[in-house]
Image (cartoon, rainbow, N blue to C red; front, side, top):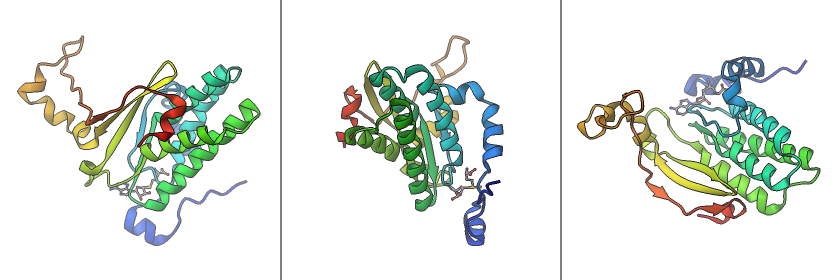
Length: 215
Ligand SMILES: C[S@@+](CC[C@H](N)C(=O)[O-])C[C@H]1O[C@@H](n2cnc3c(N)ncnc32)[C@H](O)[C@@H]1O
């Protein structure tokens, strides 16, 4: 039996409430949203992600789907692996947790690629994976520092990605904004008010292998 380390130090528990969730509980909770957790492009945000226990489990589920569907065609496998990776977001206050979470996710994606395609991902593809991870898994304060957090939305169109940046504080203010006259007139097909955040930066459509070279 493997004993998981849920507490790193009593100081970290006291100062940051850091008690990590065990794998069994993670899987049980993800089973509550089973379909979404296995869908390649469903978006998840963990606002206090620790060193990534939920993030890696979601990635593994998504990558199982990618492997089953696309392992026979390299280009489709690659682009869908990136779609899975780019739809998972995390924030943690502690820099070391963020670094560990990124490394764990990279290792899982790397191993999945090697197992499915029987070859290691080339340097260029590894750079793309790392680039996406550093844009999505962020050090920050998700309670009091959301004005400093920028999220990247990645939208796969064929073999290209559309990259748009959004301010977390704008997304988070949705409820407040819905009460203003400007946005109250926007509604969905059920007549309910909807809020459509505006990107603070947009990038041109980029071939998936060229993403790693962007700023
Ligand atoms: C209870 S742990 C849970 C970690 C992870 N979600 C898990 O289940 O394994 C809480 C985490 O939240 C982080 N944290 C505490 N306050 C935070 C804040 N204001 N913004 C972002 N992360 C925070 C801590 O550093 C810690 O890693």
